[in-house]
Image 1 (cartoon, rainbow, N blue to C red):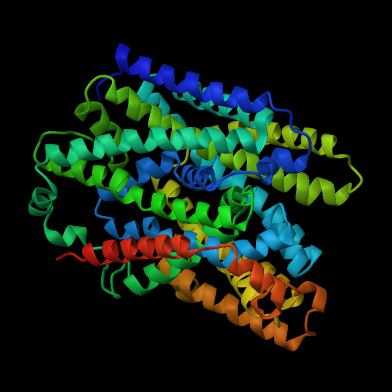
Image 2: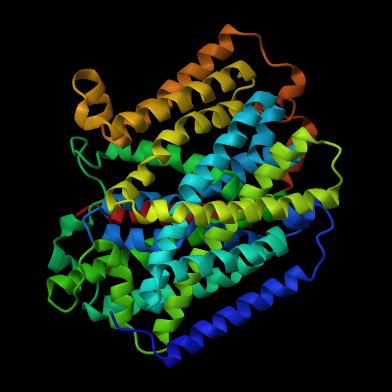
Length: 537
């Protein structure tokens, strides 16, 4: 890899100056209360909401990993980048219920719809999952990327990035996060788009890539008998994970709750849906370009995860390298800021405020800042463990989502579509679901020592397991709910499709226009077009 030169550092320096200028401007605006600190006063427009959704999703491990998938014959993973239609579900299906309930967090919504027990369970589980997966993986991958790009020690890169991001997240709250994410989205798109265009030109266009690798390489639909990516399981499991991640996870939903109203929030998800289609071209294709150049002997890398940074450092001229490097740093920092803020929100609103409901607003803001600081420290403490984890286990962490998502997706979907679903059904599914998820993870870790049924269970393709697990969770929720008393009216009023008042329905109809419908249809058509195009022919 070529090292960055003076002009590259100038671009990186300009990026950081503008970033911290925006952060300082937000920090100087006093955070009056919890709504101001955690949800930016619920006064954000659609453009910023959509950009924040996109920036939260794209981390450095996402960029590097997706390019690695493109460079290592894992094209079916592309389906996770076609979840633009699931982002639309957040705006059209889920957002009106969240906004109507006035909640800050997803566990809080579960309490309104089901029970306090469900809220506690999801709160504690989400915090543990964030620290052990999202934060640790992002910090580790970010440290690797920063040390490779800037030529500095891994620890220096990881610590500097975490501390700088944690600082403006603690001081500025949600407003600092979403406005810096808007800037980071612009930098990331410009940088990655430049690399994609120059990369495709360098290999002689898309048809030349197909000639080198063969059309079958670009097939995202493998046979149902494929051991790695059977298409029925891939489609179903990726959809389940998508609904959990995009529609029920605090990490993403919190961005939409900052919107001025339902109309701005929905438009933010439509804009986020458009942006969500970009990673296919901005990150996956550069990985394929790197593979083509390697096969032609024009590029050299050892691991597929090196494809993006190696391509960037060798293909781009001075200055542009710095721009793309700034884009990768932006991806890392935006993901970290998002998860830091989501963790502090969950702890302050769902745990501390529940234990001490009389706490004044200004103190809750302080608690939120302290919670963010603690999360930053936990993330740093976890780095040595992540540094010793092999690439196999890193990939394994991604499959964990297929075990976490089914019970949560099941109770949120059934909860708003069926008014008969009650707290007993939801809580039982959460508890049993988490036990099954933990059991599957444990069985995978001790798989070599198993035989018989337990080995078969541990060895089952994670996509197939996720699909069956979801069907089990749906059945369990329905059976337990029907076997117990119906939920009281106050637990369903306005929180399910079957209990919407005339006023709710009228309000929904006035929250969108023909522009929103047409834009959503365009996103759907684009998703279908990409799915049909990459069929290996």
